[in-house]
Image 1 (spheres, rainbow, N blue to C red):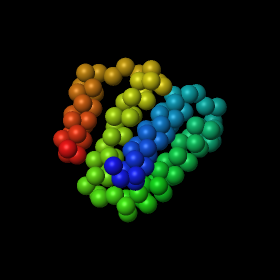
Image 2: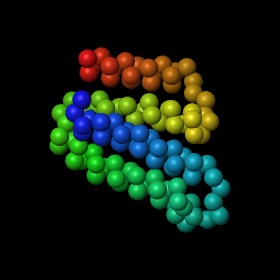
Image 3: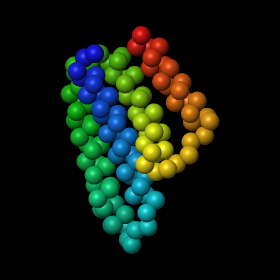
Image 4: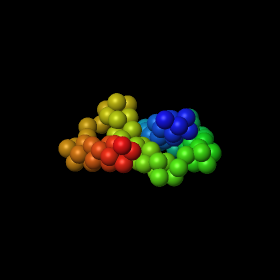
Length: 111
């Protein structure tokens, strides 16, 4: 596997983690609108998202776009896993089925 593909896989994890940080911040009570947007979770989440954007931009120059777009779809699976593990959210059968379809599509496309 091309090393830049591994980098793209890693960025899907960081993307999902930043989204979970944003949701954690949204679920908390904030004393005013400034603290709602200027807290460590939001700042870290945007920092991660910006870093992922830079890394992905470079990695896309080294990986065929047909593989890069498939790898990006893996972030949906990561979001579901992080939501379950970190936020203790339950997922429905439809969500599980949808993620299994995504994983099957990735496997079918890449094999």
